[in-house]
Length: 166
Image (tube, rainbow, N blue to C red; front, top):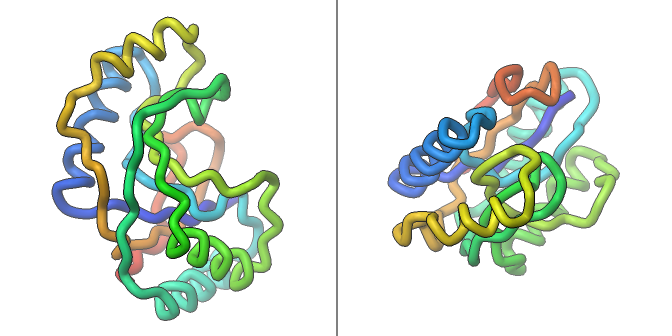
């Protein structure tokens, strides 16, 4: 199985990676790289998916993802995250990706950047949000895509097979 990510770069990547590493260590969650999943659960031959990722990267123009306040849900992979503003640009990129990859998303596109994976009581997630550092990025430029091979649901088994600048 594969996933297509938008990956922050520069200072935004560094700051988000630091927060994710800190939260993962503190709450015994898995470590993972900062990303916004553009498409998940892609099936197919790796070489074909790489070609499609290149096609999407060639079609894109850099834009900015604006991040909103932290939030949480009850699912493991949406434990704690920063919502991304569903701007026309990001919705258009998602639509282009859906067409290029001939994907049938299982759920509505809800762009976000996860900060912590796990299953925690709501009170713990609220406390984590209250203690988040005030200098979290409020935006990042979209200039990089990654195609990720996921051998399992464990982030330790996720490997970037192609990184593309847009």
